[in-house]
Length: 286
View (cartoon, helix red, strand yellow):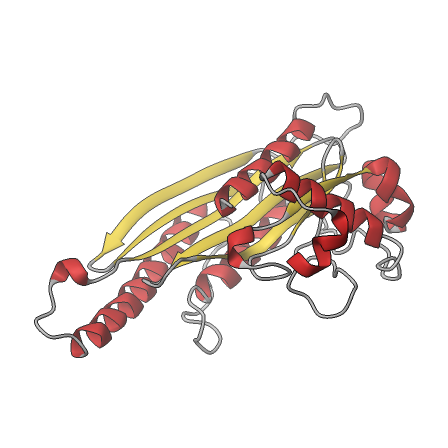
C-alpha cells in the first residue's frame, strides 16, 4: 500500500474543510512557502515548508510552534544518533530567509556526512566497488498547511528517509491542529478514558481502510491481521485531526500492522465520535 498516497488522501480530506465558507471571525492563516531540492555525492534532499507570514498575534504563535517542529525534525534527521545532530537556530526567527538558509545548510551537511560515512563503510566490505553500486540516501521534509477553517488550522508534519536499505520510512509529528481563537496547539482530541468504548469504531475504520485498498476479509479476522499485543486496538501516536466529515486517524508504519499494509488511515464521522471528543476540542468541531 502506497504510504505517501495515504498521506495525500488524508490531506485531501482536510482540504475539503479548508474550502468551506467562514461563518465566524477566524481569518485565514496566510502562509509563505519555501522549497528547495539539493544533493550531495550520495544523497538527495527535498524540502517543502509552509510558515505563517505573521510573526505576532495568533498566527505568530502558530508560526513559533511550527518552527519548533521543523527544528526538532531536521536536527534529528537520522535514527540511531543520540539527540540533536546540529544546534538550534539562535538568530532572529522573524527573518524567514535567514532561518530557512540556516536549516538548509545544516541539513545538507548532516545528510552529506552520514551518507558519505555509509558509502565508505560499504566500500570497505566490497571487492572492486563501483560508484553505480552505491545506493543514494534520500530525505524529504514536508511541513504544510492542509486545512484552514474559521475555527482551526491544520498543518501536516511528515518526512521520508531512505538510507539505502530495502525501503525507506515515514517519520514526523503527524497532523498539528491549532485553535485559531488563540493560536495554541490542540494536544488531545479524545477523552483519555474512551479507548474501550471506541474499539468498535476503530475496528470499523480499519476495515474500511483495508476494503478501500482491495483487501477483503471478515471483521473477526482483523485482530489476526494486526500486529499488536492483546485484544485492544491502541490509539495512533499521531493525534487525529478534524475534517468536514469527522476525525481522521492515521497509524504510522509498523505501529499496528506490517510495512506492506502502509499507514492505515480512516475518518470516523462526528455523529459517532463526538461523544468521545474532549470538552475543549468539541468547541472546534461543533
